[in-house]
Length: 294
Image (spheres, rainbow, N blue to C red):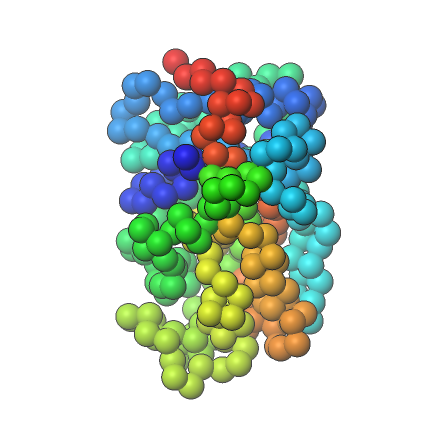
């Protein structure tokens, strides 16, 4: 069974905590033991993932073969996607930030001596389903009925019920983007802004053309806006059963797949990049047991 928070749509507050370990096996066991609190104000979802090499060294029978971390920068034609791989990630989502805040603090306190927070990002939805460019995000997302087949390692394979997570923070150059007329913005994205209809004459370097899921394969996105009025962007949260699809999309965006780099990278740039393996609930139980936060 997959971790339920992967598919828990409609949550209003999010926090992403990335950890570096002082004790790798201890960090895996401690984070694997976490479960949703028995009583919360409005509830909270926990999604736990690990650097692929750390998980596979700890539990090789529960790890997809060949899965690796984001261990090297992706450098393309004027595009840099930095590798900022950490040892583990905890994504918390819920109805209100006070619940997220309290659970996050409890988790961090419980990991004393095992790992430290290396990256923390809080985020929230914007105008229901738009990102901070003003465009609808995730138009090509599979439905919740279709999503498990896209996101989860299939039964009978090592790591079954788990998923590969690509987590990147993309900072927006809001002034440059908002100086563009809407028509120019639409040509950068490859969709109309009001209703997200794909443009028939979209440029070859448009974001839609460069990341065409009919070409690379489907992913399940849970992107969220992050930041402040003066410094903001998008948390790319992409789940897939296979890492190669995610990697191929990044290469295409950087202009490393025989085509032009993504026009959107002129107005937003990656500041973090990491892959995590998100094990199934059964794998987490084997790794750490079921110990609920109080």
